[in-house]
Length: 408
Image (cartoon, rainbow, N blue to C red; front, top):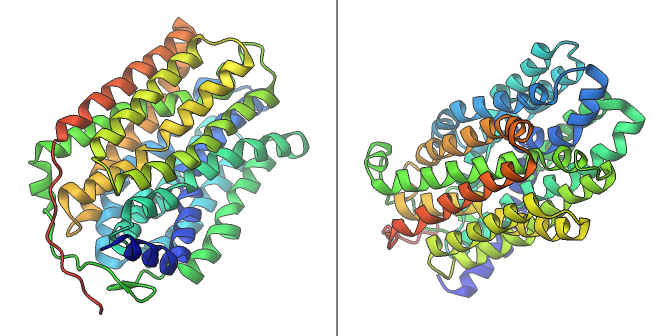
């Protein structure tokens, strides 16, 4: 399709993009991930639990999300995105409400575990499948716009937490956050999450004619290169992002400035996602990803070594700009390398690598800070970003699956 076709796709499908952005930003993965770091100090002060134990809740939300990702892919391929999303969105709210009311650490962890299981169908596995199947000429940009919901969560949640905690405490704040999927995401899903089988708003998209089976994908070396890159990247990214606020306050920076640093990452992620999405439609995707992850490595190194607030803000912006590549890059590469025939199941398995890194990294990073200091922890993140960048060019030339245009 021409660039005119890409513009027509975007004009016709903007409601679907907006519904997807709200869904991914308030998902069982993004909402706990971006809220728990800014909440950690208040929970520690109010409960007496250790910070590393508090952040261990991410192991339950993201770790169980990793286990559920292949199941979600199968459910989406089998029953469709709308049915899965409408059933799972209330589950996010229910799980976080349990965590908000918990009086013991195991009860707190249980709430995050319930968020992961009951809300599993809100993960990017679903939203990337919606967008990849609905857009062709503008697929990269549409993925970037839809998955920018995580950037909006990274921008808004630290500020919302900082504003609510003094008035409501950590429990009341978490209860408000639990209500957001019901108040914001669910109405948009009911109204606009209607991905047509053959068109987006009347604009024809390719038939899902080509693609590897799950078994064929797993036997392909490119599957493991993508999975290895995303695992290394998310170990680096999750550890750095969740611990950014507590690690900077430990240096003597006030909580408001630290929250602003976290929001700076989110602000930079937003143009980063859109820029990367547009570049993926035009340039060699592995090269785009390698450059962006190299930038992330430099930013992580600066976060570990810089002391002046101005330097930290520049580094946070650099991390966010580069980190905007990860979700849309993985979704784009999965569609290009393996087609759309069994995309949900293939992407779900790849997403398990992402969620595993997201689950384990915050606690490991916090322990590394305690054992070796903030500087070495951020340097470890920089090294992992470089590993993720180095694996991508090994993908070589990407295949082009044969798909036919259709109008019905």
